[in-house]
Image: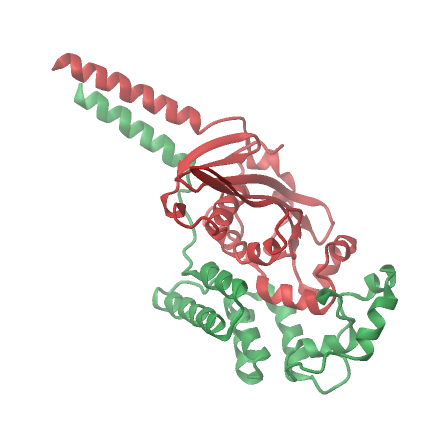
Length: 171
Length: 226
């Protein structure tokens, strides 16, 4: 009787497990979404530092367990460095992303080009060109364009685009 | 003693049968549900800034913190969500209307992405009643090819977590109950709820390149999308 009971339970467990994922990928995401959410809720330097530490922890944990660093982590850390003006280091992380995930090459190269040619004339065609002509409220945009916000980090890669593009997203 | 055992066995068997039923509402194989995903080899996904249809103004920013992880676990390369959002803001493509006007093909050119994920946040709210309350997060996800512009995958779901302990999630009409004790205390914390909603919806995707089951899950059953 007991044997029968065990059999029924075992069979169910087996069938139920077939419902779930049998195999999965191993990534060391840690508490990524927690630290990011905390920063978004309260965007201060401390929370940013905590998130940066988390990104570095994800990288070191992945290396320790010899698994792939999750998609986007190198790039996110590199981008933060770029915004802080640490261009050389930032570019290295973007390159690491492109090496780990060749799918990201186009975008990483674009970010690197933008970051390293800040002082020069605008690089590749921006994403927005066709939409600019489609969206009517150009008059709203223009004044913003003429007088870009004075307090901006100089070496950030968005400055390139900020100069040529109206800052529509900031409304 | 024998009688007691017999009853136990009977109850256990019934319980097992019940559990199996709870696991299977109206199902369809992944291949039949999302044939486009198997015709194209989608490796990389660009998550666009979510379109917020909820009443919470900050849902867009907060939700985007939770989306990358589950997509990578399904085996896809996911473009760094935070970086993409920032670039989009600077390119003036963060607004809903602007985004909807951009053809998906544009994102192949600019980012090199195989597919773009359009996200609508349909619910993001907290309700209180005298002895409890709940936090709800609802999302509708659409994956489109940047080559053809066609829809590859689409799914939606609502996760409602009762702040006094139990949870129910609705996928394609299904209401499933699970216990989430961790959320008991965190009445206002949407992150775990959003993560549950994501897990529920995203698990219906065919597995991507980095997943060990890539190309072998055509027969996997998912709850039929509405």
